Every structure is written in C-alpha cells, then in structure tokens.
Length: 194
Image (tube, rainbow, N blue to C red):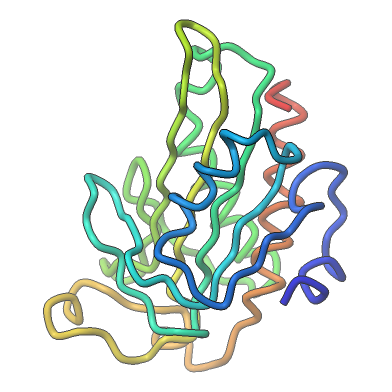
C-alpha cells in the first residue's frame, strides 16, 4: 500500500513518512503515541484493519478488513489555535474534493465532520488538537471512509454506506489517500499551518 500511495503523491511534507500496519487497535491512539515522540511532520499512520476504531464522542467506528480507508495524519502546526477554528470542515471539503477530482462523484458534508451520500454516512473525521497552554503541541487528523465495504452490521446498515455500495464499482484507496494529502497540503501551506 505504501508504494502505491507514494506513486500518486506530489507533497513536500504530508505522507512522506508512511507507517502502515496490517492491523491496529486504532490509528488515532497509535498516532498519538508517535506524535508525543516527535516523529516527522506529516507522518501518516494507516491500517487495513482497525479493531477499536474511534469515532466522534468516543463512538465505535466499524470497518471491514482491507476494504476501507483508515488513517491518522500527524501535524506539528506553526499557526496559533484560533487559526484552526474551521479545520474539521476544511478537511471535509478537501476530502470530498479529492474524491470528486478522481471519480467525478459529488458527496456531501454533514457539518462539521461527516461525509454523507443519500443521507447515509460514508465517512468521518476525528480532529484532535493537543495543546500546552496556548501552544499547539500537535494536531491529529483521523479519517475513516467506507470505500469497498458492502456489508454492514445490523445496527448501522440503515445509516451507513460505502462508495462501492452507492456507485457499484471498486475504488482505489491509495489514490484517494494520496489525492487528499496533495490537496490538504496545499490548504495547509496557504493557511501557514505547516
């Protein structure tokens, strides 16, 4: 997966260091440990299988092994806290734009952090800003997108969907991840975040 992502990347910072794991409890928890150890700015933690994925408000995030996008970006911002006020919605915009750019598919945002289609949830964003006083120590951006999964647990099958379920084709997880990184890095540079 790492090599395929790198084939489509045009970034200077984001995802230059890819930490891929076949299986993890949670990309967010793993990324948090790495961020505390000061890994390279823009490091991305990706997994094929997340056993205890975290959604908003500590809800569980379900994902079928090897079918979806599950990653967390680690960023050490150089901006102040106020400048990250709209970060989650801006990430969502970058995400839906990256999918539209590759596949000409328009998705919607349920503000601030859900990606939806046909009133069903396709993906979510978990943004965590860790501070020390007024100073931002690091920013974690967790993204989960249902890509090629077609079956969902009974408790969420009426509210969750995937790109493949909606559009009847296979999607490249690697292309979506790299295109998002390309677009989001441009946003970060324009806003002086990195």
